[in-house]
Length: 107
Image (cartoon, rainbow, N blue to C red; front, side, top):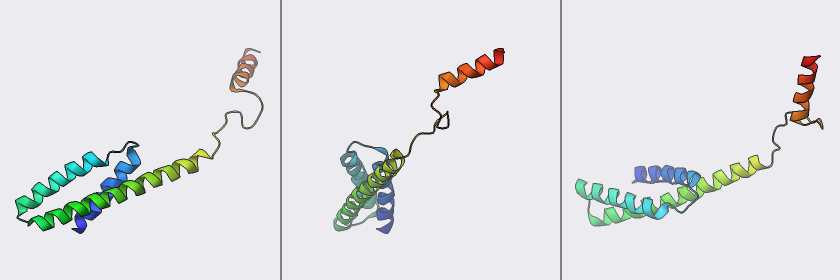
């Protein structure tokens, strides 16, 4: 059961960090199908299968939320920084700097 919880947390955090659209319902259905068939094939009873699927679905949603929050926080942290400048704070633009280089090369 703990293996299912750990892997669903990791999968959820990857999905939350990657996708902006709501991807959880198809992933939950696919995962529940795989877990249900695998658990039934191994001979577990129906109560164990239902609990496993519920743990999978709830921890997957928790991981999705945490992954989305971490990516949004990291994006907000980088958004506040200024982009590097080619002219090192001078008022000349890049085109003007290249013009000076070309003029000085021709002299």
